[in-house]
Image 1 (spheres, each protein chain N blue to C red):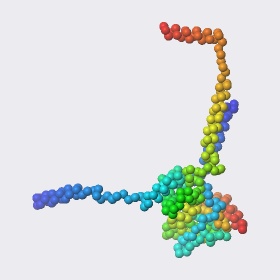
Image 2 (image 1 turned 120 degrees about the horizontal axis):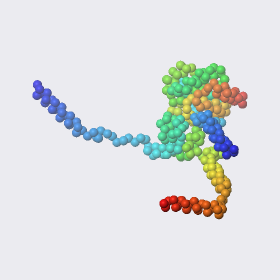
Image 3 (image 1 turned 180 degrees about the vertical axis):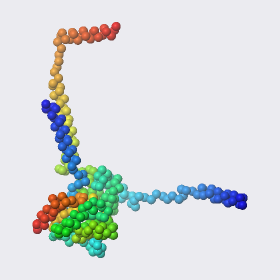
Image 4 (image 1 turned 120 degrees about the vertical axis):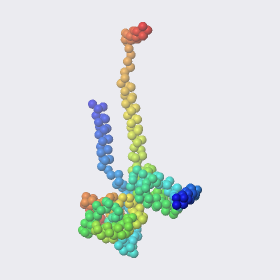
Amino acid sequence: MMRYLLPLFAFMVLAAFLLVGLTLNPRQVPSPLIDKPAPKFQLNHLHQPDQIMSSDENLGKVWMLNVWASWCVACRDEHPLLVQLARTGIVPIYGLNYKDERNTALQWLKRYGDPYAISIVDSDGKVGIDYGVYGVPETYVIDKKGIIRHKQIGPVTVDSLEKTIIPLIKELQQQA
Amino acid sequence: MVRQFNGVMKAAAFVLVLFLLIPLTGWSKEAVPVAENPEVEKRMLLLTENLRCLVCQNETIADSRADFSNDIRREIREQIKANKTDPEIIQFLVDRYGDFVLYDPPIKPTTFLLWFGPVILFVLGLGSLIVYLRRRRLQIEDVSLSQAQLEEAEALLNEDKKGKNV
């Protein structure tokens, strides 16, 4: 009996591994930047190009950094959610306009709404590399001490906002 | 009138033939080097051949034409020009993208299974094969024939020989 059951058992183990493998997303590469200080930047504003924003300005508050571009189709999917989130005033969202043209970016914000406290411009993608950006949109949650606590690769969804991002932000806001 | 036309045609033909004498090769220029600095390019290529493009995950950054790879190549060129060493550049990328960018991941506790898993599987397979073969050998009993059986077998064999000779 055992000699017949053993191959069946081995097959079931193999099948279970393959089944789990199917549900994994190879695009979700864990970022080494989680729980590390957010890379510092000094970037020009999108709306007033003569103004410069430094990442240090946000020390002492929990904030979100959303990497987007007008050429990015998936950004359009998540955008209404960001606009809604901004309206609730739970957390300030900063937009990193990644490798984009100023005019098309401004038009895009006019058409789809502007959820960003400040939009900053990373035209050559240098800050993007510092943040390990490889698939726009990407969203970072950064705590009061300037530490990256969460990275969402790809568009934020209702699910990811409700289950992960908003609870995390509320928890981080409680911390000193 | 016709004669005059013929004259024009002849002149045109002559000019056309003259055109054929223009050496075409004279127009081409020497190939422009792909990169301004071939040495930087060579080092960059060597480095990127072992780096994974995160957008198109089965391509190296050296092979990939994705925007992401273009940016990384530009970044590496700049760092080479800034006199960074190869390990420094690799570390720069690993800090940002994790070990996943390396086609040659370092040996550390999280990658033990990756590095040694195949060896473990091989040893397990070999072990069970040896055990199986040993057991099978034990199961085969040493069969010895009795005298009567031997004679019978010999008789059968001889019969066969006779049959062939006929």
